[in-house]
Structures are given as C-alpha cells and as structure tokens.
Amino acid sequence: MATMLRLLGFILIVYGSHGEYATAGTNVDDCNVTPSTAIRIKLGAGSKVSEGTEFNPAEYFDKVWGIINDEFWDPNFNGVDWEEARRRYRPEAVAAEDHESFAEIINQMLAELKTSHTRYYTKWDPGYYIIQVVFGKHDAHRSGIGVVTQRIEGHHYVIAVIHSSPAEKAGILFGDWLVEVDGQPFHPIRSFFNKTGQEIELIVQRGPLESTRKRLTVTPLDTKERDRLGDDSYASSETIEYRGHRFAYVRLWWLRGIEMKNALQYGIHRANETEGIIIDIRDGYGGDMGYEFIAPFLQYGLGEVTVESTGRRKTFKSIAGCSKPLVVLINGGSRSGKEVLAYLFKKTGRGGLVGERTAGYVIGGMKKEISSDSFLYYGA
Image 1 (cartoon, rainbow, N blue to C red):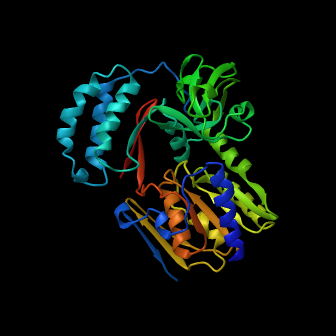
Image 2: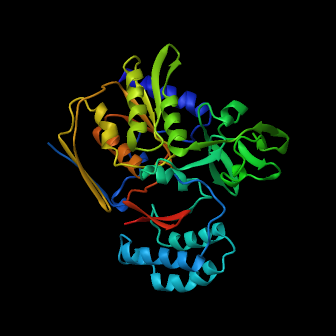
C-alpha cells in the first residue's frame, strides 16, 4: 500500500505539473464503462497517400448509406429515421467539391446515430492509417514529423511527440499549437504530402500570446504507421526516478498485435527491477478487449473471464504474472478495448486508475472499403 501511495503521489506531482492531464483520481467511477455502453463483464472460476484517385460522391454516398441500412448494430438506428437522413444529406454530399468536403457531410449524417466506432475515413484523416493497422494492414504509411495532434476549436495541438522523431529533434513539445507549415495552415496530413525528405518551415506557438511563436525547420519522414507508434510504445518504456524511488513506465497506443505486447513485456521487465509500474493508455485507439494485457498482472488469476460488448464476445483463462503495484493513466481518449482494460483493472482492484473519465466507446467495430482511399468504420 505504501508503494502504491508513492506511485500515485509521483504521478499527481510530476505528470500533473507538466500538464499531461487535467484531473486525477482513483475513484472507480473515473472509468466510463457503464450499462449504457452495451458492455457486460463476468468474472468467475499499405496504403500510401495519392492524389490520383477518382472521386465519385454519388456512388460513395449510396455505399455508406446502404451498409449502415443493412448492417448497423441497431435495426432502429438509435432512433434516427435513416431514410429521411438519406433524403436530407444526399444532395449536399453528391455536390461536394472534393473528398474531404464529402467526408465532413457524411460524418455529420453518421453523427446523428450517436454511436462510437462509426465514421467515414479518407486518406486525409490520421485515423485512416492507424485503424488499418488495428485491422492488420501493416503496410499503411504516410509522411509526417512524428506528432499526434488533437483539433480544438479549429487549432491543432500536440498531444504526443514520437520518440526520436523529427519533431522531437526539433524541440516540439506537448501542448504546442502547430500554426503553419510553409505559409499554409497546419494540417496533419496535407502539410507533409509529397514533402518527404524536404525541409519545411513550421510555426509553433507555445503560449496564449503570438509573441511566443517560433519558426522551426523540420524534415518529414515517410514511415509505416505500425512502426511509428509501435516503436514509440517500445521506446517509451523507461525507468523513472523520483525522490529516491524508481518506477517503470510504458505507453500503449492500441491493444493488439505483437508490437504492443512486446512493449508491455519490456515494461514488465523494467517493473521487476523497480517499485511499481505506470501503464499509460491515454489517447490512441482501442483494439482487442484488453484481458490479455491485464493477465500478466494477475498473481492468482480470475478463473474464467467472459467479456461481452455489442457485436463481440470472448472468453479468456487467466494466468499468473507480475505482482508489482501499478497505476493506469486514462483520459477521454481512452476508448473501446482500452476502456475494457481499465474496467478490468478497476473491477479486480489490481491497479489504480488516474486521469479523466474515459470516452464510453465500447462497441464492436467493422471496417468496409468504400474506395481505394476511403473506408467506413461502423458499429455492427
């Protein structure tokens, strides 16, 4: 217990003082897995960005609408008159000037369903690449400088800097507002399109005043998404020393595949030489249901565990593993499988949860190609 309190104290002081998240707490309600998210847990004994693709908005709209009409998880469409939605949105979508504008209209329509894991992705959306990795398409890649951004009120802010990336080498920090690239407003994909290996001028702002702006020179790299974030999870594993105490830390960008499992195992290896471990599952994407990522920390196991969510059901048998104290960092970007993992830590009492309320996005997700550079991700 004393070690756990020191671990929590370290997180609240060190991470909080650097602005990495806004609130903290270990109350079990911090994890937003409730009956409303359609989850029940029982415990017992190589797509490359290319401009040269044809854009057919009428065909794409009909495909998207039809898939939802035939395969959406709720036959009542969460109370939405889906036929009426088609009549309202189709004329505007068909008249869209480009694929990005079309995607905005489609996503307005899909948003009426009020269901997570339901979005239309194009090559101009960062999620287009990472979701392909989660679904096993390991050759998806794009040009970039190694930052993960979040759009807030029309501005793009850095929420993570990838280890050993051009951004890290240029001194870009968490919280920076990325203002412009080569004189044009920043865009997470377009700003680096066809600029691999070329120096670009990036303007960043590090405070509320324009006087805090800096001009940086950065050279984008073309990297597979799997490698970019997978390598970062592995590289993030470190031993943190604080007031004479040592804790292991590891960040997991998603919960699937050998990259994340290796990163976790490396973190556990470090934990065996320290007083405890911090597992960071903030932001990123979900993946599998999370049990395989808590299993190494269950000293005696839970017998058989069945995890159910809309569209998915899986049963595991627990194994014994690392018994060191641990804390899990969560926020509003912790979604889907990560929420199940957080819930399992909460339910078993194995680890403390620290951070913000999670997203409440627990549902089975399917992916269907709409064109060579777009797909529909939907709850089914």
